[in-house]
Image 1 (tube, rainbow, N blue to C red):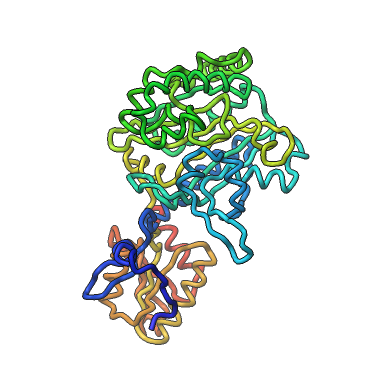
Image 2 (tube, helix red, strand yellow):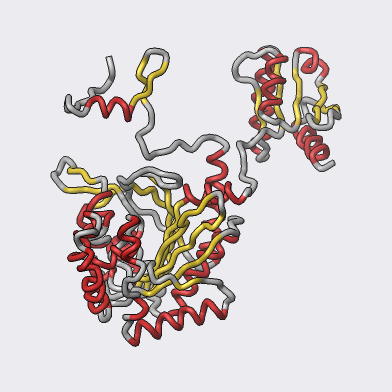
Length: 451
């Protein structure tokens, strides 16, 4: 009997079984949900190295890490991300908890960080406030290369910095992140989508432009025509994309303040030698953006994809109940970063290999191997030994498979003499060591490793 009971509707069980189980040896084996992925040994080390580079680069810009819950009340995303966004309308994982409250698994990081900032009064300190974060996000969308229903993000948010140079500085941080990860085939595209003062006029221009095509728009964009025509501009439908090519451009409908702000952002990027392209079709998919928006796109032929997106969201903090504090930030998907790094041919870490493998024969030798390994780990040396009762031949094969740099064979004879040899697995050189002198063994390993 199973320790749990699967409840299902009989009409959808066949589809449930197909998406949840795989047929193997006559049995249905549980498998991971569609749109999720397992990070295996060898891959996880690459993730750790990537996260370390992201964290270090952000800290050089003064960003401190914050950690937020995986789920929040649904209203946070409805108000923060926007009722008309695809995320809220189609992609959120929402459930009712035992207290009959509507809760949602985090679909993006910014709204949760803003809630955290407001609830903990962080804007009451010195501004600007610079925060970074690693989060797992959940969106119900079509899985494809680099896109998952559960995915990891790294993001930064800067609060209380209104000047155009703040926009340029956040964009520069994004560029440096990719440089430090060794991702060279990348382009930066920027745009300005105006503010509350000039956006209504632009929305009206879009509505006027797209109205004659309303019978040909996709069902999604037909709804957007009345609620948020700005989102039609970056629709992925082939027909809608054709209509959008000649649509009014945001940069032609900016108020004087937004125009001056955007020109100043470009001037700062030019001064720092940052290459970019102005792309009037970048509008971003979340409703809270205004003024500067940008994307970093992988241009490598083996992996063409948007790696990072962000922009300014002045007014979001106030919308969620906080003070009138400006904000700007971006997020990048770590899953996609890994794919981009692989496409670039970067050398990624593999599973760590033991510096010393101790092959033990007999109960006393096993105790010795255990004690020596414990001592070496105290010295921050990765040592491994047999834990399965293998033969000497099998132990040596295992050491070879694990790419151990050195091996030490210990049996009754070696323990009685108090002497053995450490073998360099690459050169074959054997160095005599005193088994009772653990410190001398560390020294011997160090000398051989530095040859």
